[in-house]
Length: 77
Image (cartoon, rainbow, N blue to C red; front, side, top):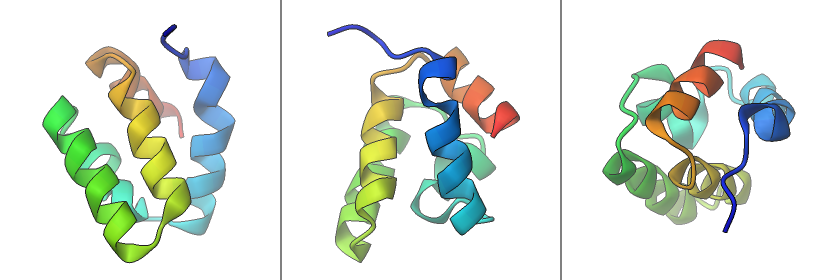
């Protein structure tokens, strides 16, 4: 599976952020700066628990990306 690039997904993250100004289910990653795989898995599970399907999908996307890419998403979105 090929890893998505930041330009491939940035608009989707920006859209999510507009609806969730403190990053909703992705807060642990994109607001608090915890970029490890286990943090992405936790956010995906949390999003699933609260019925946030977009947050879950975005957390799964972050899981396929490097930590550097995750930081870039946090900085650019």
